[in-house]
Image 1 (cartoon, helix red, strand yellow):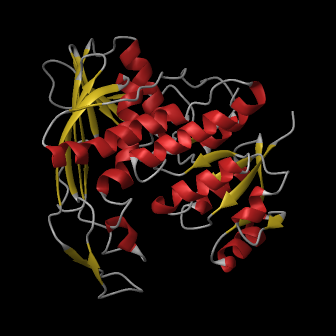
Image 2 (image 1 turned 90 degrees about the horizontal axis):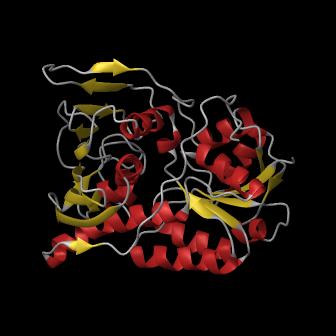
Length: 369
């Protein structure tokens, strides 16, 4: 079976791990060409990874009949326009998170892909890694009894002290929920299933942020999005979950995600990773978590795993795991916290999704089916 060919739109900071993994790990996909608004970035990628084509712009890429899937790794507020144009050109699309900056824009993309019979999906694919896959298997096998609830925390003091260009984190499409929430919500719904309703409270703790990193040291950012978001989720299975994401405070020692069961608590590894931080379980009578062995592949940084799975799904006609039903549902959950806060009421969700099968644990690394 021939390799599925990928066309890159955007060759920014995160593109390196995609390019490394596509060219070195995943055997069934290949990069056919790249483009970027900053041409020098694309030129460097072409040279470093021996990529055959350098496009002048994304429209030239979309017009290339050799491109099977467009990989959209532009900035969050650009995702909608790039994905929409690619779908209109008849290309399958895998996008970095989030699917779009608003639920309404996500609806347009999902409907457009369905209308054209195209595959649409995207990041995060960390839930396909060894950590979350093992946790899901344990829950389904009754390892902690009946799931009762969950708690998730993403706590940091912002990106302006280290990121070279942090302004977009505080503009439309950014903020801690839209930036990091996709990892946490995607993990939660893969472990516990869809969310039926949410309630939330949000705020902007500091109206401005001053960049202390280079090269924009001293630049003042006007904050346009909530930087402290707390939400409550009612899952369809009856479990209740809470989540806090913030760029405003200093982190403590709380675990990333905890799943509470009738017979124990599962400490889930960092959902921004693939499981290398490990799993622990707390049983009645114990205060410290006992390590649990990983049962699946891909515990290290395996970004592009979801893209490779989509490519295999296109070849075989099955549904891909990081699909638009999932990314659309996650988008509605995230955006509904702020809507709930603004409207001061609980929000019943419109979307849902069906969890796809667990990954295969007995295949060589880089082979999906």
